[in-house]
Length: 392
Image (cartoon, rainbow, N blue to C red; front, side, top):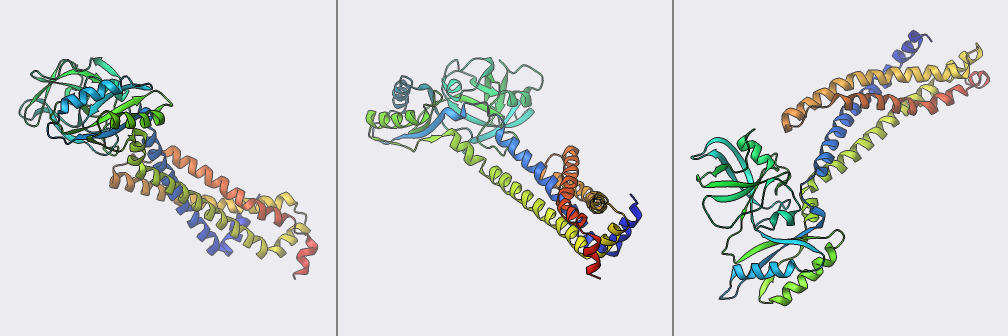
């Protein structure tokens, strides 16, 4: 097939072709980057937390009596909860991972704020904390005792690597910003802290819980499928055991997680919707241009049919014409997509656009363009020489 006659026909009606090519270019730039950002958000939401977050719930307990004994309350509550059917383990904890609420500070590998430095989430719990969170130790054990000097700590592998690099963390000592020493008695294989948007969310430290209260939070881990029943039974049992205190609302860790990732989920849904709409509008633009060209060239099509052009020749003509417009848009769109990806990377510290997404976008838009032009091209092939001459 001669390309020059098709190009000449496009140049005679170049305004529409240029507008559609520009629409395709903008579509490619938007769609590729939107899909890439959406994929980043989906991967972020789906990353493992290192905890049994689907079977854990938490709540606050606060005493207010005159002779309130915080240690006795925690001890008696834990003894009761750990014996209840459906509960794997329970532990007191100051804050709850994935909740968006927590504490952090800087830690150092040497005293006086020297050596390697890294911030970390820190939590106070007891010797059942590791099992209750459903996380695993890659080395060491849980707390040896609640007193002693230096203080004991269990740290995540992420924090261990930041502070000690390639050295073994177990048995080593690190320091807070006041030069208080902590001896590492256990290393957690993987765990997330409170703030899922933090790039150091995997840097966590657990320390032994000490008083004096008057309140704390409890975390409870249940058998799979038992969480709703156990939550109801737990609330009833706690209020019955001691009605003279405040038991806060029971919340699932999965709900904390969902709320923490709400912004990422909303962005993923929004970008998916925008991507779909942009593709639809682009397809409609291609369809409209192809339809306009068919309607505007009825006489030309009839003439070609009269001199021996077959239906497939007419279809091929319009499909090739559309491919040329789409290709022009795709070339310009690649430049726009790479420019937008570079800007997003610098502005929001995102990974550079993966070229596989760009290649997929190019192939996808070519397919969408050809599909959108298919029906008008087939309609053009049905124009007979007799129908064309009636319009003369």
